Image (cartoon, rainbow, N blue to C red; front, side, top):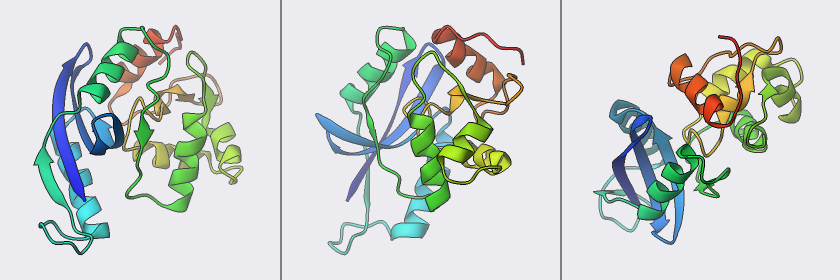
Length: 180
């Protein structure tokens, strides 16, 4: 499997991504704000799934290759031109619970929020709001799985792996204003 990595400039700074598939039908494995985060995620994939080489044994080949479609859709979302990127995430690591949380978070509509408690219930684990926060902190594809739309039950921001300023900015792009 070929894993492609790249970065691009946006109104929120550089975004780094890891993807596979074709340029017309990409699957996004990682989208985040730091090259170190991308490299850490890539190492976790390799540790969990195999080694890197050019063999036909299920291992990975890493290349540096951009996907214009991914970049265009993320930039369009950040400019407010679209409400959903329609990009497909490919989760190569994560527990069953984490994937349920990410799936539940991906269903929060543009311009709306949900709470950690409601996401826990949707993931089949009522009362596991803190665990939801931990799972969202490991979300490998920010924006695509809009974990920035998950807030505390009392209406406050809660955490965000890329920091509260970026969470506030992303929510603001969607017309949502909350207290930090």
